[in-house]
Image (cartoon, rainbow, N blue to C red; front, top):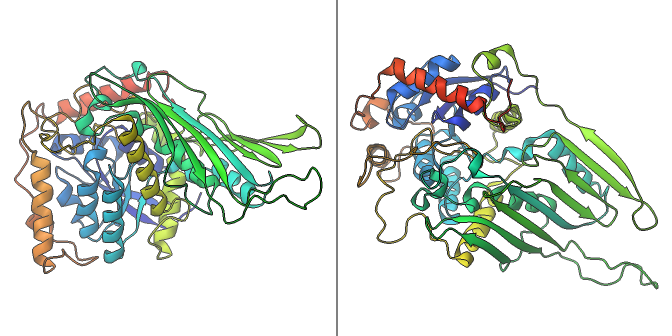
Length: 482
């Protein structure tokens, strides 16, 4: 796998940041020059030592102000993605936001507009789109190898009982944007959008879900989408028995949740066959193509395998990966580097328009099933939560331990939020009210917020705790071991 050189800075030190950093080691042209934790210099230093990153800092503003960072990977908890993304964009950095990129379509549009104004790359980390199996499926669809796509069935359910404490886990914390619709739904919705590239689904859609009365988050749900097409439904050919022509129209039945484990497959139905992206469909390495032959139930089956990049000794020495198939994050990183080197500002594999559309559907689902947004009027700050590092950064089980992303009891605002506000205020002053121009990052010492409290335990203890957490996670059944 080859890609142009790109220097990365990591915002966050949690599990998904660990896996992304490990995957970058599989891409020789990539380098991680710095890692930052929201409020713990010790956590950042421990992460840097573990992965051989040359620099670390205890605040996000310091990292985005560094001249040796080209692109920022934002892997903190998603309830803070807009403000952290804004911080990086205003500093003139290219940005890759983990999923979901924001907690509302409006916030995503805001980041998209800002990145366009600043002339920097912006994408959401929908890593599924970059897997060779998925790219091959897209080519098959474009070449009409299965005829006209008419329907998509996709699911993503995992069981939080395998890795999360109820109700302490952030996955069940509404004010931290908990709920299956944020953690799971983006995958099957994005799968459906991929199969009908000619148009987004109709505004109205069907939705059903189960809400947890105790925590207020959604536990599982389903959506039914209808995709419009430019053509009508007139019979093809006009002869007796001719099949109807849908003209690009189709439907999608999608389900998601975290109270049970599903097969997790994406099945794409066409008039001339079907494609199955096998489990785990959000990071697949195998697909099956069935090309229809005359007669019901008759077809020719082809199974294709797409092995992951080989895990190196360096990755194994640092503890491997937390999540299945995380070596495939290297595909995403390589694609981002290619686009940036070519002067592109968005990913052709997963456009930011798709990011916004997925969030529109997620918001619509939550409204229909009666789930409140993370911050309702009158809500206090989320328990003093900070845009930290060990919280869930991806739609995966086990991404956060109980108590992660929780601040001191009764906290009314966080040091990290203050840090972000200070940095943004500086950017506005320097840029005449609109922030610094692209590529003109303010000096780190001028945007640094009040110093974080000295972390306890000390750095050595923090490093030991981080390694223990890694070892514990790597023993879980769902984790891919090196």
